[in-house]
Image (cartoon, rainbow, N blue to C red; front, side, top):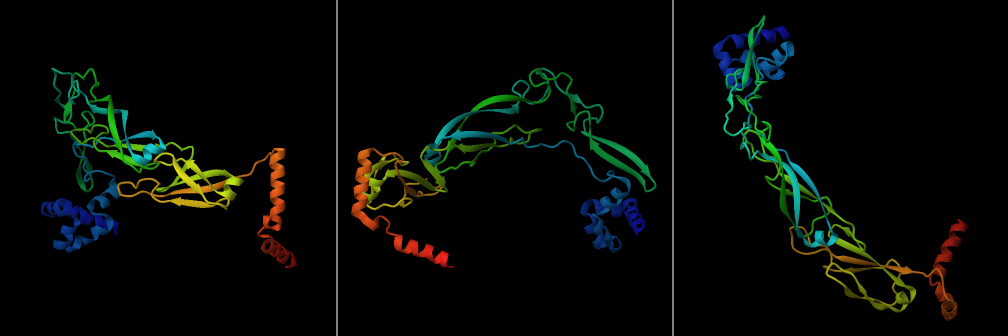
Length: 329
């Protein structure tokens, strides 16, 4: 079966009309006008059949070096919690490859010009003929001497040494929008490395790293604050000053506030990235129990306990009943 396919492939190669159709339309053209060759589709066309037996030559063509886009660059930028919330501008310095300012990208010392490559005669390609029992095959590869440019630099540029590009330090201003989060990437189009052979420059990606805040914790567009208070403030209530993203603000602790109780402050969170509105701020109460008491404080707490009686443990009935039920089971 394989030799039948090779013979069919050879018929195409040796017939100028069929080879012309294949070169223009691939095996689809052959399957339309020459039904006997429709089987080539299962093997990826003539190239796959020949390549399987004789390697990669004859049909896979390496073209002259084409324009190539420059590499992308990445820069990690550390900002504060507040800067991430409200946005800012930052000046950064990067190192990138640019078209050599001395030779203007020719790679040759000013006053000199590259010569036509003697190996490929300026085509950028090298052709080799290989004879097989199927006939002669021509391989076309990129010229190893000029690397596909068709030119050879005789007097390399003293600045870039013939590389056509030079590493340059540049200062750029990055606009950071409100609401960015840790790991957010900001793209600066065309600010990466210069391209090759007239290709476009790559991009610069600024990766945001947000420093932790001493008080706030962020989840999405919401922020969380743990507010420590004492048992008197929890029992009697109080008015205290708390930090917010907008500055210090008054916060009312209602009487009878329980440990772990959370209060929601609408619109006091992080601005939404590229949208209107803000998240919320949640204040979670942490009642701090003193580890050491003065004699007077201890006396007062004992007297308070006497006045409250069993009310000190308002959950006694339900709690102890559940414990008894567990042991009975």
